[in-house]
Length: 417
Ligand code: DSN
Image (tube, rainbow, N blue to C red; front, side):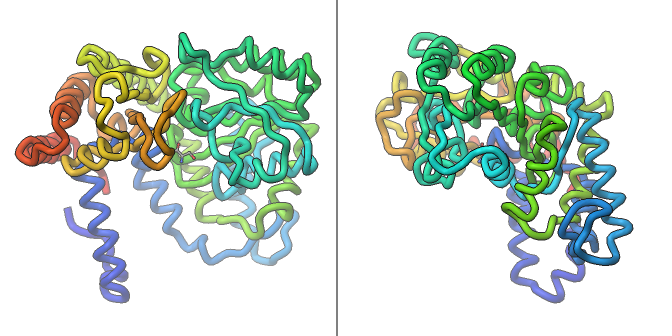
């Protein structure tokens, strides 16, 4: 395949060659980062379009700039499709990222010093859910809930009992490293009973929610936030869904509250992604993500690896390396696998004993490989690759041999760009 970077190669050969390097890396690596995906050429065209030239502060029909006729149509269509996809009353498609979306929700309904109850980062939560060094942790009084020691699943009883004693202004639910189905209905009831608002962050599982393969939080949560580039397979960005009564506050918390001009090229990419996500093929794709993830997770378990929360119901799972490979940190494992063209990320695990920079776990996800067309058979092959590398992460011959096989496997599943 040739490079489509005609102009860029002439104007800035340095950047063009770095983009080419990244293109080759994406083509030749087994991508297991649970939060990454390969978006479609149509989405990439929209994001790479002349829409990047346009300022459009405000919302459709209420802009602070002239010349917004076409971007108004684009944003309105993106909103309409988002509402259709998630069956929600209101959608704001302007957040630049998931963290921006969450921050805007906080601004819309919380005051500094308010109490929030959130899932701890170590147990699978997210930085923007009250981590001490995130703005959410600096502005609010944060209490965490987590997963149960035995099952590794969210401890809903603990969450309920903390909520009833604490009376938080808001509960957040949703995770970046949690492999089990989340009971949004139960958390909705807990929030209601203690008078808290509920924010569900579905950044990781949005594709599963949109296709009905994971229960939706929309009926139970006041706010639902997501990114658009993970299981939704769209451009890098964020979005907020909410009930009508919060629409005005959310819109003004996004603009002018936390952002200036919207990225209209990205909003166009979101609209294209939502259209793709409304097609029946997208549900088939999500089903295959789940089948692949179960297959890979079971294969790793059969090889003796310890799976956090004993399995997976979604697109990812976590391996705790401590029981089987106590001498290898997540970081060392990540580096060795990367050298064999297997890309994933180290992760902290519940009751972590290493620093977050080392970690004792690996997070493994199947959305990207499934987009390439890989199925159960390839998952078994990848489980073998990982087992062999982790047996001795210093064996250069093994790394070289697996790298060769990984490149061969990727070549059988070419990317469209
Ligand atoms: N950084 C994302 C992830 O990898 O899960 C979450 O924001």
